[in-house]
Length: 129
Image 1 (cartoon, helix red, strand yellow):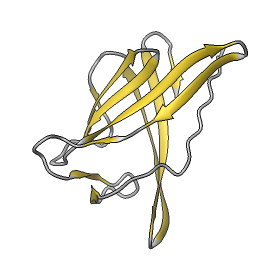
Image 2 (tube, one colour):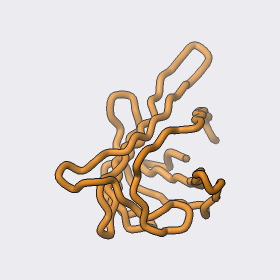
Image 3 (cartoon, one colour):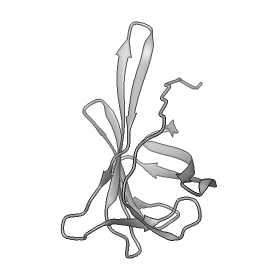
């Protein structure tokens, strides 16, 4: 993820799905968005990036007949040795819409999220240029 120039956020993500049938890796998805301005992902989801309480936050609502969404939060804090960050990305259930449904990030096939847990996360901050 790169913040800037200006109010832009550029992200690149590669998802891995792990199930009882093994692991599958999806294609890399990338996009550039403007802070505070609604946009769409390449998959058609509505997305909004904002700065809130020392965090960079992405609000995402699944589109195309799906239900629910996700909140990505990158918390930033300055320490004596530089910038530090934390990362979280829980799903959000849309009230009255039932299950969380979306296109698979690996192959686009519709899926229903029954349970989810992060396997690992890492977050590092660096300044370019």
